[in-house]
Image (cartoon, rainbow, N blue to C red; front, side, top):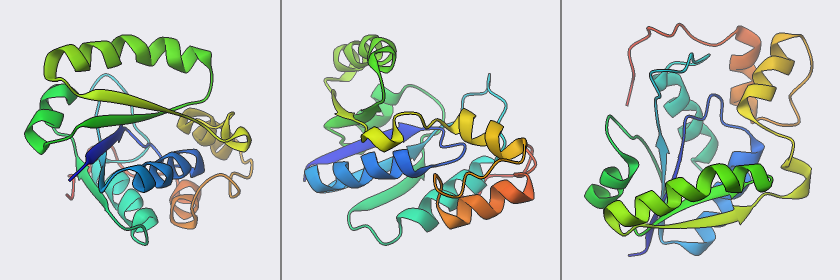
Length: 166
C-alpha cells in the first residue's frame, strides 16, 4: 500500500487544502491528513475542532484518514505509520524555499520523500491566517472554506483549552 501524509495545523482547513488532499488521494492508496499542534502558535480552533472539521469535510473522499500527529517529529510519525511520502501544496516560490530544508531533513531522518504539488491558480492567495483575518473583520470567506468551517468561523472558533477529541 502506498501511503502518504498531508500534514498541517488546518486552523482552519480551506479549499486550497482540500484541493491538494484530493489530488494526493488520486496518487496514493491512502492519505493521512495529519493535524498538528505547534505549541508556540495561538489557534482559533481547538485540536478537536480542527480534527472534526477535517473529518466532516473529507468524509466523501475514499482513502482518507484524519488523525492527530501528536508530539514529536513528523519524520518519526511517518516511520511509525509506514508513510512513504509527505505531500505539500506550494502556492509560491517562498513556500518552496520554506519547505525544501524540511523535506531534506525528513528524508535524511527517516527516508520519507516529499512530493510538492503546485496549488491551483484560484487558490494561490489562500492561507488559514488570511481566512481568519478576513472573517474576523467581517469579510465573506464562504467561497474559500467548506460550509462546516464557515459556520464555525462565524461562531468565532472554539476555546483553546478545549480538550481534543480524536
